[in-house]
Amino acid sequence: MGAGLYAQNYSMPSHLFPPDRFFAVIPCAGFGSRAGTSLPKQYQPIAGVPMVVHTLKAFAGVGRITQGLLVLAPDDAHMDDVLAAYPQPLFGSVRNGGATRAASVLAGLHQLAQQGVRDSDWVLVHDAARCLVTSAQINTLIDACQTDDVGGLLAHKLADTLKTELEGRVSKTVDRSDKWLAQTPQMFRLGVLQQALAHAGPAVTDEASALEAVGLHPKLVAGSAQNFKVTYPEDFALADAILKSRG
Image (cartoon, rainbow, N blue to C red; front, side, top):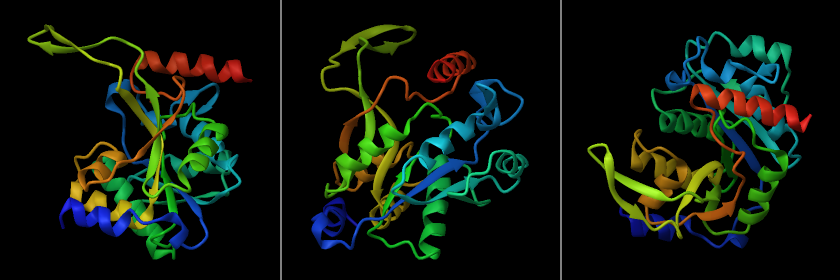
């Protein structure tokens, strides 16, 4: 199906849809090899509790979320103990995560559809490792996107000078005036997101890229520099300090 037809079918005026409902999908099937931890990084303690718990608490603080879904690896050996120690009644879980983030998200969307979630319902996809997101930021995204014909994502305007590289040396400086760092959550209607991810394939790195690939243009919603993805060993200390400073 061509990009133009996707845009025609799914960029539909929001007033034509049933009343809004909001769901969350948290892909949680990766290990995070760059983090250098012995556990999958989402279970590594930060500020005294597993990283993923901070993420889930932020969504639990958003009263408009109807249901959340954790997409786990088939052999996940940790989440049951985490949820027993830190109950999260908003979230259910499935163990059908894939080899890539996109495959896990698509599996989560299929699960929601099987549970009766409508194609027109909104789904917020969020990285488990963005444990510094706040309920206020999630609400800001919902407020900005729930009347949008496409949906959108939290993002942060690039502040640093941006270079391209050739053989270890600067090739050129890139104009940063229109550059944003994509963050999560990313919020789209279930039907279009399923179709776009299936079209884009498992290598796509975020939901907005899949929407772009079918001719749609997600809305950029200003996030926060603190909503970074914990990826490298030094990120853990920074995330720990920020969470402790919040009390």
